[in-house]
Image 1 (cartoon, rainbow, N blue to C red):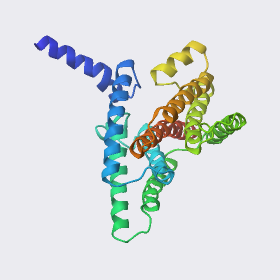
Image 2: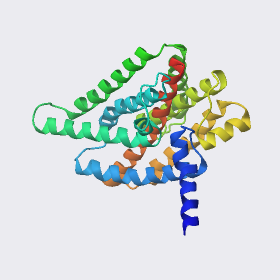
Image 3: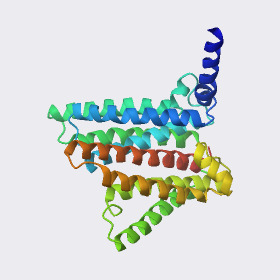
Image 4: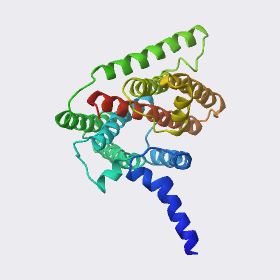
Amino acid sequence: MSFSIDKISQFINTYYLDPIRGDEGYNAVNTFTWAMVLGICIFGIFRLLEKLEVKLTPRFIASVLPFVLAGSSLRVLEDSPAGIFHPPFSYLLITPNIYFLVFAITVGCLWISIRLQKAGLVKDFHLTFASFGLGWFFINLATLLYFENMVASYVPVFVLVAGTGLTFTFYLIARHFKSSIFTDPLNLSILMAHLMDASSTYVGVDKLGYFEKHVVPSYLIDLTGTALVMYPLKLIIFIGVLYVLDTQFEDDERSLNLKVLIKMVILILGLSPATRNTVRMMLGI
């Protein structure tokens, strides 16, 4: 019995706890686990938004995005060599723990914003909600700029130009072929977020000496010898995912809302690392 407990403890430490303590990135085991947890959380979030009577509209998605920027910049604060945060609190700011922390803060701000609207103190909870996120993001950014120097100001320019430029090129091709799926604004936003992520990975790995922490991208970068492989990888995966989402879901309102939620999560999964990588490289962290 003690042998089994020791083995289980060793397994948990090796694949889950040690990567968090040492900020070592991902392995095949924890990658699969976090993907399963994310899938379960999506349905939990769906039920929560239903209970809060929040409609999944483009306006709501736009109001969530400042919290993505805030969470990503908070992660960079933990990365900072200035030692702004210390264990054990700093462990909360390492993936995947930081996702739960940011989610809890985001839901709290959403609840407050909705209550303010119901009390007649604000006209539109979306604006109030987004303001909380923007305020948090600017505080994080100001703190980072106070402790760190800007050493590579070209990085955010490259990431934005490359991401938007490739997305616009894709849009022109999709419009030529009269594709309603790939000219949809939300779908294009998802592709842009992930192409920005690919751009940040490329400039970080190929130009600035950073390394990829995720299992599959790391393997493909090692195999091809360049992070340029991230561009076709992102396009192949997310063109396929978006096509399936837009052709296989039912047309009833609940199914459509769930589809939009899944798309919002996919958008966040691209924008979050793109923001974190970009800010880190800009500050030389």
